[in-house]
Image 1 (cartoon, rainbow, N blue to C red):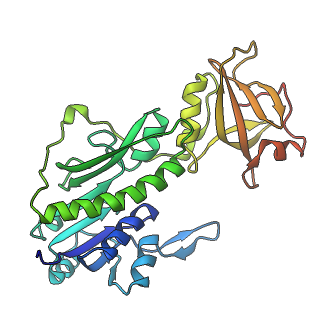
Image 2 (cartoon, rainbow, N blue to C red; image 1 turned 60 degrees about the vertical axis):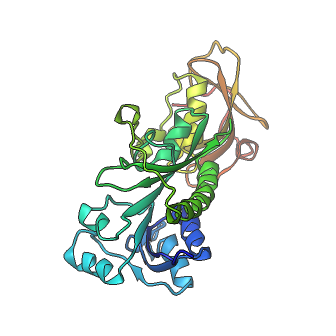
Image 3 (cartoon, rainbow, N blue to C red; image 1 turned 120 degrees about the vertical axis):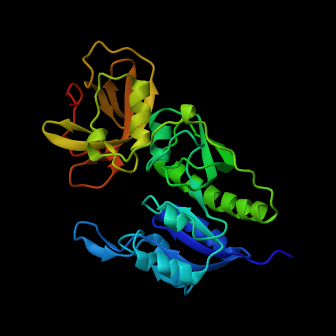
Length: 313
């Protein structure tokens, strides 16, 4: 019988939680958890622990939160813990070679795309934004680059036609934990074969900015449909009406031509806002007025602020 591995888990946000839970439910020993420092959240910037830390503390695990993973002090802490393997899931920083070389088995990573496509900080968002029909989970061997290490295991999943980043994020987070458990079992059997990535097939998935959510209505409805879903829930797509910002959600493509200029509200009723675009129209079913909560368009229209014939900019 193979002896349990000594693992150090490195992860920070919600996406990493199912993977840590999978390790806690498995036969191996998590000797410590490393995550980003507590940060201010919300309008009041209240100092809050990351989700991974909260789960780790519930299980009485040692939690390390270094400002830098490159210091000799931190490296010595890891050395003293004597891990067999580092497991990294959305930690938030590129790890130095000196750290990756410490465990005998190195480090593996759970990544939310089918590498080498969508290397970077926002692989799930960009897969939806770019209209992909498929993505998945990759277990890879970490090296000093940005998601460039050899692939150990992949599991593909379909992206639904109305899928948002939020719903896909939840599905991939759970799949990440399941795939990690399978990868560790296969690793201990000596059956994981590293496959180098083809750099020619690599695509980038950089962090998104709030400004990228400002919609250009001259784009075709299909493109806007993907963009709105890919930016839901964050940073979210938005447009301005009479100087006020409205965040837009739950789009549907309507295959019809409008004689009106792109951005014109052709119809505003309980079904939603029908908006002219560069090609076809887009029906928006949910909206978030500035300073208010997300709601159906029907509820928003009761305030009477948005009317047919108006222009979104």
